[in-house]
Image (cartoon, rainbow, N blue to C red; front, side, top):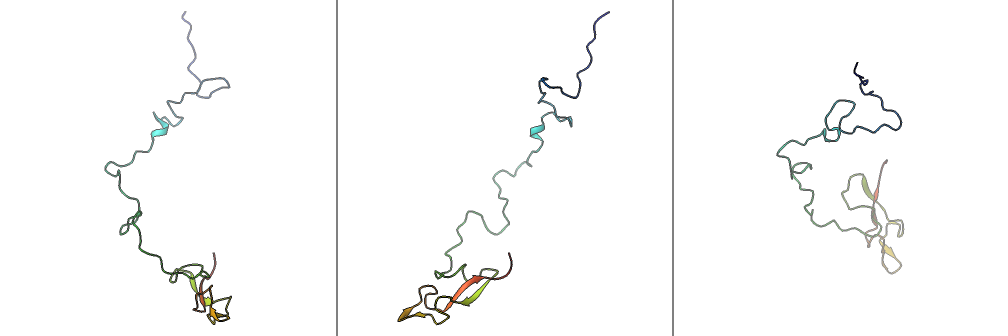
Length: 110
């Protein structure tokens, strides 16, 4: 009578070599389960209308006391805390608001 070996156990035991060629889900190569659609190489994943690497022109001028450029969402004008809204400090213009008496600050929540 020929000796028959039992089939390999699906559960590995300490010291058993791992079979990395097959996953428990039965895929041939578990690391290669995602294939990008053909023809998408080099295409941008950014929204249409603007290329991500394109420069956007110059930033609006900001005073040293501004937290963001004018027109930025969730910002607004506030009285300059250094000159109290006068635009002056002594005999010269306020360096914080550059003489406008206003600074742009963040408003609202997060």
